[in-house]
Structures are given as structure tokens and as C-alpha cells.
Length: 227
Image (cartoon, rainbow, N blue to C red):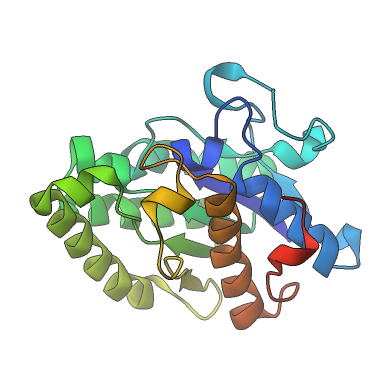
């Protein structure tokens, strides 16, 4: 299994963050005994603005790999996913995108079209890849602007329907579940970006989807991991 994280600022993280990618890497280390059975891949390793100041300096360089960017959306990742999958032989995509698209660039229907383009391009590089897609997690803007909250909800409804249509027997696509009772106060540090608690909850959303659907690893256990 060659895992590629694809995301925006919630995934790339900033200086001083652990990131949910780190939490997910810890989870795989703990639950998949055969270390040769998986690898984290991708063209980037830095945090926002090129920083490498991860909260845990022992986070291995190779495990920091990703395709995430501050301010990135489906619109930005669709044109580069094919070459990235091909270059890194990725076969499992964990994707958290959409908030940027809906906030600045595209409406729900246009955003969904970019999801479909993204998947088509990824499969052009690897027809057998599998993907887990996280719905948009509403942020502080959605909490204060009912119109934007409705836009996020509309996209998530469209995405849920599309996942079933995008999934293929040889190339499955799964929805991850938005963490139950996501709290902007507890799970973010600024109304959008994940706090330590939020990092765990995002990692768990992907880890539990992989375990329940494909038998990868085990259930996510916060207690077994670093704070």
C-alpha cells in the first residue's frame, strides 16, 4: 500500500503542528505489523511556507511525504494528480479538499466536476487505485454565514452521491465520515485548522474507513498515541 495524502491547509499544516498526517503515520506503525506492507509517498515534505518545524522532530522525513498545499482545492489538484500518482506509484489516496473551492472558486456543482476530473486523472495513472474522500468540514465562516454553510452542505450531499457512482470494483472509492460532534472550539485552533484533538479526529476518520472497508490496520485508538 502506497499512501498519498492530498489536501489543503488542514493537511499540510504549519510550523509547530504535528499534522493529522503524523497521527495517521503513527496509527499505521502501531496497527500494521509488516512495515514493508505500506509506505507514505508524495512530492512534498514541508509544512506551510516551506517549514520543516514539525512538533515531533523525530517524524521521519520519508513519512512526511504528501501532496497538500495552503489554499489548494480540487481545482488545483486535478491538473497535477495524474503525474503525481505516476511518479510515486501511489495506490491509496486519502483526500481532504473542497473548503477552498467552495469559499473562493467554484459552486458545489463545479466543485463536483473537479472531483470527477481528479479521479479520472488519477485513474489514468493507476486504474487500480483506491481513494477515501473526506467531505467538507464546515469552518468558522460556515458558522457565521448561513449561506456558506448551505453551500458546504449542498456539496457534501452531491459528493456522497457521487462517491457511489465513482467507485468501481477494481478501483473503489470510499467516503470518510466527518468526525462526530466536530467542535470549532476543541478541534481547531482558529476556526478552521485542526488542533491536536482535531488532528487525531481527522486521522481517525481515514483510519477507520480503511479498516472497516478494506481491513487495513485496526481501529484508531487515541490512547495509544502521542498527545
